[in-house]
Length: 274
Image (cartoon, rainbow, N blue to C red; front, top):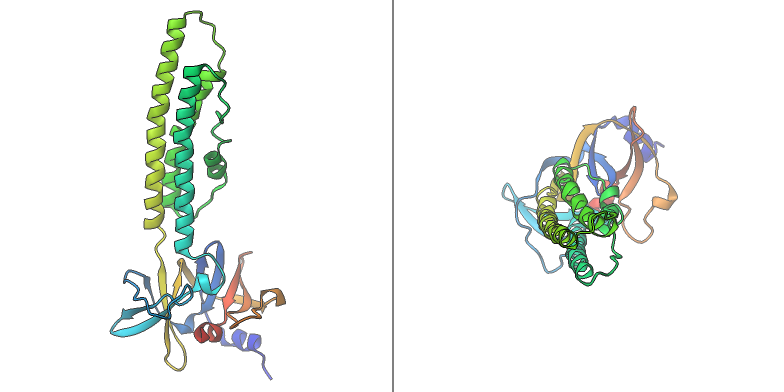
């Protein structure tokens, strides 16, 4: 008797590839009825939850939704956006405090113990390691780099550069200018961090893939991004990826031809059982 993997191979189907977070997924393209950006407001039902957020109306039909991130145990896009906002808000407040502490230390002639190296503050460490495939988000974040470096450089000039001038008035004037520069760059950085929250939200729109099974049951699957339709080679799913506490939502490992990319293939029977 032909097993499921052999059957899928014999079907020679094309696969719709998608992205959820940093992981790639795939489903049989024969299930796909339509793909669109989710623009309609979701109608929440009494039994709605993270996995089943509610329904939408499409072409006069009621479409129940499945949030694939939640169904697969991933952080929802809403939760990811909230965490991103909270992180940027904290980094913004860090730099406001940084400038106030710089002023206090200059006025009281005390050592400055906060980071003068832009790569060693909390934002700098995050910025240097953060990666995104979204070019709009990446472009906006690059705009923060120069004013952020200049902001930290003001403290380097004020506290770490050797002074060869004995003119106290000139030294005082220089430090006042540096404080003004710090405020200027801080306002630029703070403004760009606030804008980054909006850019992130505007450029992480949810896609809705409407799928239909053999019984003509419709579901809307919420995903981050739809990538392509292409052939895949399949391998058995490791036991460690099997779900033992609910519907089996993954069926196989998929591999792109001529690529090292690995995808998790959705078990559509399990998805519809949700």
